[in-house]
Image 1 (cartoon, helix red, strand yellow):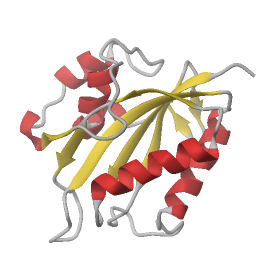
Image 2 (cartoon, rainbow, N blue to C red):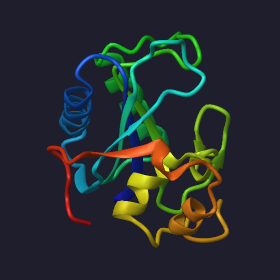
Image 3 (cartoon, rainbow, N blue to C red):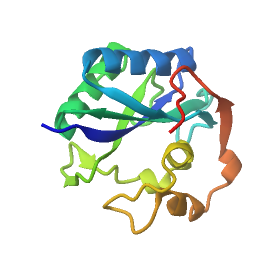
Length: 175
């Protein structure tokens, strides 16, 4: 099987958020030794939306890795790492989390399966995903979008300052 480039969104709003993201990536790379980290965006902080009052802001980023896996196999690894980091399999919608890993894209793969929809069905609506993704892959075109990722971000109607630059981290790479 040839390697596929996977885009993965990372988020955390519990505890040491930066350490949670770093540990999550380390666990993922440990679980998939044949994976190669291709790119990593900076960190961005986002206020929680539709969460309980007093919920800590999210720290978000996006990485791209390449691995000889199917999207379903990679998704299983993402779920396993979330669990390892303390995220329960059954949880309330918008509940705080130590680590959230979402598969954004998998090369040109398209799936409308309810368990794993790829490309992610709402990525073009989420500045906290698009901002770091544009940083590493501004010219990326996905099968589900008519234009480039940078054009999707420019079309957003929310406030650009809703996602704030929060620095670089251990997995920040130049794309």
